[in-house]
Length: 256
Length: 173
Image (cartoon, rainbow over all chains, first blue to last red):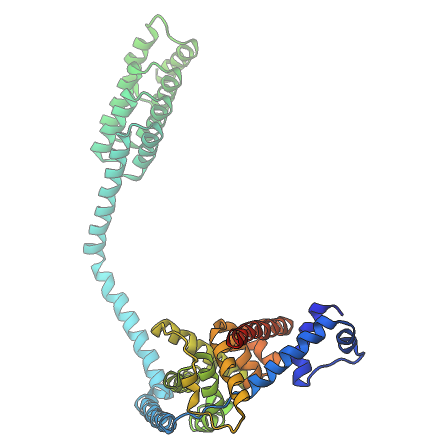
C-alpha cells in the first residue's frame, strides 16, 4: 500500500470502520512517519469537528410545517373530489363516443368546403409555382435558369406566360444546357399552337448542333408538317454541321 | 416514504419528526444562516411531496433526502447570492457546552476554518462527519463511485486542516 492509498483510508480509520484484514494499512502507518504524523494531526481535527454543537431549530419551523401540510392535504382532497368523475367508466365511454361523433361530423362538414377553400388554395399554390418558374428563368446564374425550366413542368400546360418565358429562353439563352432543357419543357406545351410554332421558329435561331438535333427530333415526334420549310431553310445554309444536316434530311423524309 | 409515495400524506409528518433536526443542522453547517436553513428544511419536505413519485424504495431514503437538500440549497444560492458567514455569533446561540477555554477556542477556530472552506468540501464534511452518512450513500447523492468519495473526503479534511493550522498559527503569533 502506498501513501496515497493509505490516506484515503484515514477517515475509516478514525471512524472505526476500517477493513484491514491483512493489516496492510497498519503496516504502512508503522513504516511511514509522514503518514503517521498526518493521520494523528488530522485525527484531532476530525475529533473536534465532531464536537461542534448541534443546533435546534425554532418552534416556528414545526408550526409552519404542519400548517403547510394541512393546506396541502386540503388542496389534494378538493382536487380529488372535483375530478372523481373523470375516472368513472361511464364518463370515459361517453367521451370516446363524443370524440367519434365530433370526428365524423367534422369530416362531413369539411367535405362541403372543399370546392371553395381548397380550390382557392390550389389557385394560390399554382400562382406561386408560376411566379417561381418565371423568376428563376430570369436569373443570371445558368443553374438557376435550369431550375426555372424544370419548375415549368409543375405549371399547367395552358399557362401562356410560362410558355412565352420558355420560348424566350429557348431562343436567347446563352447556355446550351438551359436551351436543351427548354426544348424538353416546351414539349409539355405542344398542345398549344403557340408552343408548336415557337419550337419550329426556334430552329433557325440555334447555333448549337445539340439543340438543333433536339428540336428536329421533337418536330418529327410531333409530326409537325409546318416545319418543312424551316428545315429546308436550315439545310440551305453553308456551314451546317454534318450531323445536323444528316438529321435534318432524315426529319424531312419523316415528315413527307 | 413508500407510504407517502403511495398517497399517505400523513406519513410526511413522521418523516419530518425523524429528520428535520439533522436536516436543519446540515443546512446550518453548510450556509451558517438559521433563518435560511429553516426555510430550506420546509422546502425540502414539500419537494419530497411534490416529487414523491420519483422515490425508489430500493434506494436509501437518507441519500434521496440529501440529494433534494443539495438541490434546494443550490437553488437558494442562485436566488439570494448570499455570502456564507459561518461566524461565531451564528453558532453562539446553540452552544451550551461546558468546556474549558482552550476547547472553546479550538471550536471557534474550526468554525472559522469551515466557513473558509469551498462549499463542496464543506458539504462533504458535513455529510460525513455530522450526518454520519455511509460512503455508499454519499456516492449516490453525488453520483460518483465510492472510491472517489473516499479521496474527496480525505482532500476536504486535509484542506480544512491547512486552513485551521494557518489560522491557529496567525493567532499564536
